[in-house]
Length: 170
Image: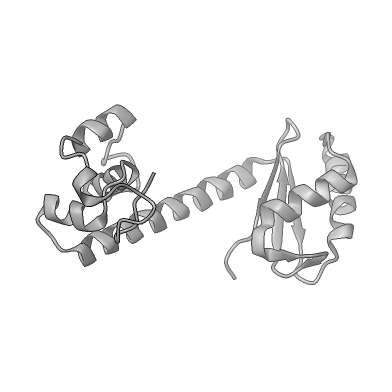
Protein backbone atom coordinates (compact mmCIF):
# COMPACT_ATOMS: atom_id res chain seq x y z
CA UNK A 1 0.00 0.00 0.00
CA UNK A 2 1.23 3.50 -0.78
CA UNK A 3 0.91 6.04 2.01
CA UNK A 4 -0.16 9.56 1.24
CA UNK A 5 2.47 12.12 2.16
CA UNK A 6 0.25 13.40 4.98
CA UNK A 7 0.15 9.86 6.38
CA UNK A 8 -3.48 9.16 5.54
CA UNK A 9 -4.15 5.85 3.85
CA UNK A 10 -0.93 4.34 5.10
CA UNK A 11 1.31 3.91 8.07
CA UNK A 12 2.26 6.84 10.25
CA UNK A 13 5.80 8.16 9.99
CA UNK A 14 6.72 6.38 13.23
CA UNK A 15 5.61 3.09 11.69
CA UNK A 16 7.69 3.44 8.51
CA UNK A 17 10.05 0.48 8.43
CA UNK A 18 13.55 1.88 8.69
CA UNK A 19 14.94 -1.49 7.63
CA UNK A 20 13.37 -1.44 4.17
CA UNK A 21 16.27 -1.58 1.72
CA UNK A 22 15.49 -0.25 -1.76
CA UNK A 23 18.37 -2.14 -3.40
CA UNK A 24 17.16 -5.41 -1.89
CA UNK A 25 13.61 -4.74 -3.11
CA UNK A 26 14.87 -3.95 -6.61
CA UNK A 27 17.03 -7.08 -6.65
CA UNK A 28 14.11 -9.30 -5.62
CA UNK A 29 11.99 -7.73 -8.38
CA UNK A 30 14.72 -8.29 -10.99
CA UNK A 31 15.23 -4.59 -11.74
CA UNK A 32 18.01 -3.71 -14.19
CA UNK A 33 18.46 0.00 -14.96
CA UNK A 34 20.42 -0.85 -18.11
CA UNK A 35 17.52 -2.71 -19.75
CA UNK A 36 14.43 -0.94 -18.40
CA UNK A 37 12.79 2.43 -18.87
CA UNK A 38 13.29 3.59 -15.29
CA UNK A 39 16.37 5.14 -13.77
CA UNK A 40 17.81 3.61 -10.61
CA UNK A 41 16.45 6.54 -8.57
CA UNK A 42 12.96 6.23 -10.08
CA UNK A 43 12.88 2.52 -9.28
CA UNK A 44 14.08 3.15 -5.72
CA UNK A 45 11.39 5.75 -5.12
CA UNK A 46 8.64 3.52 -6.52
CA UNK A 47 9.84 0.51 -4.51
CA UNK A 48 9.87 2.51 -1.29
CA UNK A 49 6.45 4.03 -2.03
CA UNK A 50 5.04 0.55 -2.63
CA UNK A 51 6.36 -0.41 0.81
CA UNK A 52 4.24 2.37 2.31
CA UNK A 53 6.88 5.03 2.88
CA UNK A 54 5.83 8.64 2.56
CA UNK A 55 7.56 10.95 0.12
CA UNK A 56 8.99 12.96 3.01
CA UNK A 57 10.49 9.81 4.57
CA UNK A 58 12.00 8.80 1.23
CA UNK A 59 13.41 12.30 0.76
CA UNK A 60 15.09 12.17 4.16
CA UNK A 61 16.52 8.74 3.38
CA UNK A 62 17.86 9.85 0.00
CA UNK A 63 19.10 13.23 1.20
CA UNK A 64 16.85 15.27 -1.07
CA UNK A 65 13.62 17.26 -0.91
CA UNK A 66 10.08 15.90 -0.84
CA UNK A 67 9.39 17.95 -3.99
CA UNK A 68 12.24 16.16 -5.75
CA UNK A 69 10.91 12.76 -4.68
CA UNK A 70 7.47 13.78 -5.94
CA UNK A 71 8.95 14.78 -9.30
CA UNK A 72 10.96 11.56 -9.58
CA UNK A 73 7.87 9.48 -8.74
CA UNK A 74 5.73 11.34 -11.29
CA UNK A 75 8.38 10.86 -13.99
CA UNK A 76 8.63 7.16 -13.16
CA UNK A 77 4.89 6.64 -13.43
CA UNK A 78 4.86 8.57 -16.72
CA UNK A 79 7.69 6.39 -18.06
CA UNK A 80 5.79 3.26 -17.08
CA UNK A 81 2.66 4.47 -18.89
CA UNK A 82 4.71 5.27 -21.99
CA UNK A 83 6.27 1.81 -21.87
CA UNK A 84 2.82 0.22 -21.64
CA UNK A 85 1.66 2.22 -24.66
CA UNK A 86 4.78 1.17 -26.57
CA UNK A 87 4.14 -2.50 -25.83
CA UNK A 88 0.48 -2.11 -26.85
CA UNK A 89 1.57 -0.48 -30.11
CA UNK A 90 4.08 -3.27 -30.84
CA UNK A 91 1.43 -5.90 -30.13
CA UNK A 92 -0.99 -4.06 -32.40
CA UNK A 93 1.54 -4.18 -35.23
CA UNK A 94 1.89 -7.93 -34.79
CA UNK A 95 -1.86 -8.59 -34.57
CA UNK A 96 -3.51 -10.10 -37.64
CA UNK A 97 -6.61 -7.94 -37.09
CA UNK A 98 -6.49 -4.18 -36.63
CA UNK A 99 -9.68 -2.14 -36.66
CA UNK A 100 -9.92 1.62 -36.32
CA UNK A 101 -13.09 2.91 -34.68
CA UNK A 102 -13.35 6.65 -35.47
CA UNK A 103 -14.54 9.20 -32.94
CA UNK A 104 -18.28 9.71 -33.25
CA UNK A 105 -19.00 6.03 -33.95
CA UNK A 106 -21.92 4.41 -32.15
CA UNK A 107 -20.47 1.69 -29.92
CA UNK A 108 -23.19 -0.65 -31.18
CA UNK A 109 -21.51 -0.55 -34.63
CA UNK A 110 -18.09 -1.61 -33.31
CA UNK A 111 -18.66 -5.38 -33.03
CA UNK A 112 -19.67 -5.68 -36.70
CA UNK A 113 -16.49 -3.86 -37.74
CA UNK A 114 -14.40 -6.20 -35.59
CA UNK A 115 -16.22 -9.36 -36.71
CA UNK A 116 -15.92 -8.39 -40.39
CA UNK A 117 -12.17 -7.80 -40.05
CA UNK A 118 -11.77 -11.09 -38.15
CA UNK A 119 -13.69 -13.00 -40.81
CA UNK A 120 -11.45 -11.51 -43.48
CA UNK A 121 -8.32 -12.55 -41.54
CA UNK A 122 -9.65 -15.95 -40.50
CA UNK A 123 -9.45 -15.11 -36.79
CA UNK A 124 -12.14 -16.21 -34.34
CA UNK A 125 -13.42 -13.95 -31.56
CA UNK A 126 -15.05 -15.85 -28.72
CA UNK A 127 -17.24 -12.98 -27.56
CA UNK A 128 -20.84 -12.18 -28.38
CA UNK A 129 -21.60 -8.71 -29.74
CA UNK A 130 -22.84 -7.43 -26.34
CA UNK A 131 -19.74 -8.84 -24.62
CA UNK A 132 -17.48 -7.31 -27.26
CA UNK A 133 -19.19 -3.91 -26.83
CA UNK A 134 -18.63 -4.15 -23.07
CA UNK A 135 -14.99 -5.16 -23.55
CA UNK A 136 -14.36 -2.25 -25.90
CA UNK A 137 -16.20 0.22 -23.66
CA UNK A 138 -14.44 -0.96 -20.50
CA UNK A 139 -10.96 -1.03 -22.01
CA UNK A 140 -11.38 2.32 -23.79
CA UNK A 141 -11.95 4.14 -20.50
CA UNK A 142 -12.93 7.78 -20.96
CA UNK A 143 -12.76 7.46 -24.76
CA UNK A 144 -16.26 5.92 -24.68
CA UNK A 145 -19.23 7.50 -22.93
CA UNK A 146 -22.47 5.55 -23.07
CA UNK A 147 -22.78 4.47 -26.69
CA UNK A 148 -20.62 7.28 -28.08
CA UNK A 149 -17.01 6.68 -29.05
CA UNK A 150 -15.53 10.09 -28.20
CA UNK A 151 -11.92 9.42 -29.23
CA UNK A 152 -10.49 7.33 -32.04
CA UNK A 153 -9.91 3.74 -30.93
CA UNK A 154 -7.82 0.92 -32.27
CA UNK A 155 -9.11 -2.58 -31.60
CA UNK A 156 -6.67 -5.37 -32.31
CA UNK A 157 -7.34 -9.07 -32.23
CA UNK A 158 -4.49 -11.54 -31.79
CA UNK A 159 -4.39 -14.88 -33.58
CA UNK A 160 -5.68 -16.54 -30.39
CA UNK A 161 -8.69 -14.17 -30.30
CA UNK A 162 -7.31 -11.94 -27.54
CA UNK A 163 -8.61 -8.38 -27.78
CA UNK A 164 -6.72 -5.18 -27.04
CA UNK A 165 -8.19 -1.69 -27.19
CA UNK A 166 -6.04 1.44 -27.47
CA UNK A 167 -6.99 5.08 -27.48
CA UNK A 168 -3.82 6.80 -28.65
CA UNK A 169 -3.24 10.43 -27.84
CA UNK A 170 -4.36 12.76 -30.63
